[in-house]
Image (cartoon, rainbow, N blue to C red; front, side, top):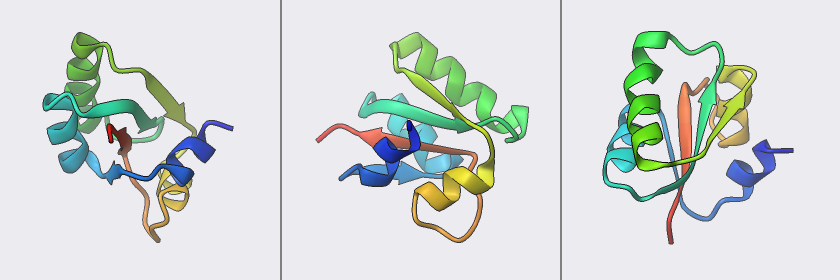
Length: 83
C-alpha cells in the first residue's frame, strides 16, 4: 500500500505549509495529498509539484494521511524528502 512509504520514510514533512516549502525547494521525492483536502490549500502545491515532475500519491482522507504520518490529526499533504 502506498501509505507504507510515508509511514516508513526516514525524512518526511507533514502539513500544507511545510510541504509547500519542500516542494518549492525541490527536496521532495514523493508527494501525498488527501482527496478531501480543500482545493485552495492543495492546488498551489500540486501545480508546483507538476512543474517540478514530483510524483503525487492520492490518499482517501486527511485522517488516513495524518494517521500514516504518526499524528493524531488529519493532514492535507505530506511528502517524503530526499536524503
